[in-house]
Image (cartoon, rainbow, N blue to C red; front, side, top):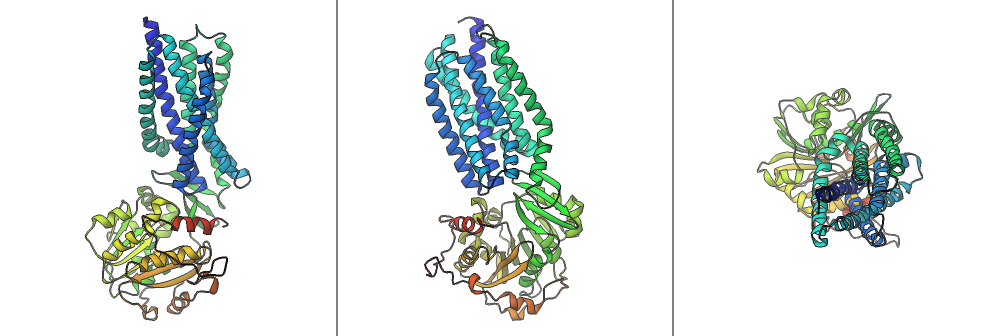
Length: 516
């Protein structure tokens, strides 16, 4: 084989690696889009991986029929990947904002399958071309496949550590589309002597390139306007951290924080939630001095804790440093949390709550679990018997834990399953629910090794909402929200503890909230 043939064959190996990097980025990008917009990350990643791989299988099967004009076919495959994949995130946000409910999921799955099929077409064509150039078939196949698999690893690392946190999902898609297009245009140039009428193919490529460049520089701004329609109020801050999408909105004095599209608080009524979360367990402990808060990176629960004269130390464990940074720097959040996270008594640790409890040997007077709802596998583990056992083991003898436990009205079975799970660790529980207008009727579970009579709760600090009489009222549950849950046949539902091995709480949560 001459030098020209070697140069072309080497480019084919490089091209296979580059398109593989692009393919895996699109695959994980679609999973991230589904997780953010449709919810349940495990479900969405499972579906996108399955559909993508199925598409690759279909594409590989179709490739058997491609025996001629290999380069032209490859170029047009890259054109389609660049155009469809590049505009995928942008179009997904548009579908979510304007299309009928449910069509966004169908659109995402169709795009995933299509890009998978196009990706499945790429490698067999490149292998045939390498063999056509004069490389031994076994050797060409092995090298192309090596480039493909190595490219898959690189693509995954690039998306997790560079593209998603630095560019976001819209710009990342456009950039990767441009890379696919660049590979196609390079093929047109290097193999121009083998392709008839190169200009006829280059012109569409240039047009696609212009569209992608415009999308790269202006698409995110337009997608932002689409996303704005997903929220009631104007967005004043939006970022994608390494863990989640963070959105802050404000309208007529109402500041709201959303994580992955789920409301975390509204400034108009957050005090009703946080006063119940904090002051009920604090009032059940004499002179609480050492407190652990799991979650609560917005600093609102810590603000309530710092009202106590007996307070010596608050340990805040929140996985995402972007949340605590925002709480310490954003004017609107600082107005709400009063700079609580900068207090000398507050120690902030950025770590997974489960891992923190496994590693620490410290015990606390009160542990407050201000965690997001259990809507995916990562959060579900923080609502399991194993996790609550860890919490129990880090409570002092007379210590108390308080758990936000979703709504006993909208998700009755979820709420009482959380209570059942906590009880399975041997602790005694008290059940409360309070009306928080921005959320609706919201539930809490307080637990301790000892029996606590809520009539003895001592409110030792000033509150806007909470009273000792109100606490008594919080214990009363109506027939449609009480522990005795009936199924469709009028029979009592048997509740089992949620565990790491049997994470059935996720399914209950999805079913409960699908109509809200």
